[in-house]
Image (cartoon, rainbow, N blue to C red; front, side, top):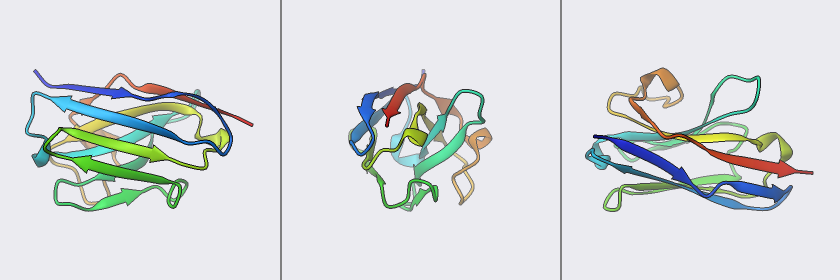
Length: 124
């Protein structure tokens, strides 16, 4: 049984940092593309960042330069370091794993397994 779980969310002030963690079990982590998505109330789920099993990393324009992913296949973990947080980063953040994800990594329908999400709230 595959399980994906996120942790590390919280409430912070604008300009602060948070580190989210994603851990997966029940799959060969190194063979999966892992992505971070977020969804704010009333909005569609959007891609944030991802790490391909081939080794590439991708970021949404809105977070590039502020967010960094780090992947450790030996530990089945992919973290999302979020710096210089803004109120518009407020959302529920989800980790997802997919075996056959296209090169852009940004299509949620291509991911097979999802966590329950962790809430990030940034106040001004």
